[in-house]
Image (cartoon, rainbow, N blue to C red; front, top):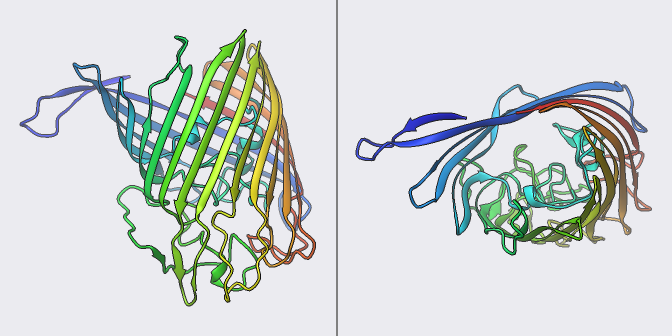
Length: 413
């Protein structure tokens, strides 16, 4: 903790801010074999460093206010960038956050337990510019704002969040019912960027939905970072509950996410289904054992509406579910989790595409802030009959079937 003084102008009194520095750094080594590998190494390394700076001050009336900035060494270009920069105010009324930040359900979601290995289905397998396992990034991340699904990726945006005080609390910290609300004018607009256009005129590529014959199939490009589909007027409302019953801990959430999709006019006018999705999760814990799962449904969100440009479309709903368990005793945790995903695959042929991901792993906490982890994953993808091309442009011979082994060391401070 660092104490400092800051003043905005000579006319304002000095305020004493406490500045908190915290972050994390990890190194991950992986060995992977995928059935489509050709001329590819089986071993690779990856690492990331993040540092958060949070100045805060408490006013005489008990209200706390401040700001937060998180910088990171993460992207392959070697440039240090940021993914959070916002101001906040906190008091008996709850918390208000405004700026470039995450949607509230990202830190408050509940899915299958992932406190082992690198996180299992929500771990390091998908971190990075491409991810370890190729051609299995098309089914939904199990919570909104997750890092590998463009359909419901709404994490990076200038937004306003409201988090209520904990209601019906039993006196324990972080227990009770939490309500959250969020609004972002434009998805994928961060920091000083502003985008008031309701029509996307960027050069739109051939992914991520359907067999790419024309730009009419895609509403999810227009820039490499932040990733995600193009939405405006994005809103989210959610509930999170934590408590205990007869010694059994309970964690659950329910969240709805909505937004409008801009049309495109890059040679051919085209419109898309609006963002409409919901997610729920539940976990139980007893004496180090955690058991739980989740379900997320996004329907036809961001799919193209059928038109002369697209021809006939076959649009199976998008959904995913997770399940798993973990056990922690002392510094060691072990666990297993899995995810099942379902989407339309190639929109020009009938039938869904399904994908599964299985993970098992362990974590050793050697000292405060220092841990090592081992994890093994298996992924499978089954395409619909008549499959021609997937959302990433791979042909019928491609598949997400892969085996992956990860070793990770991490420092958290």
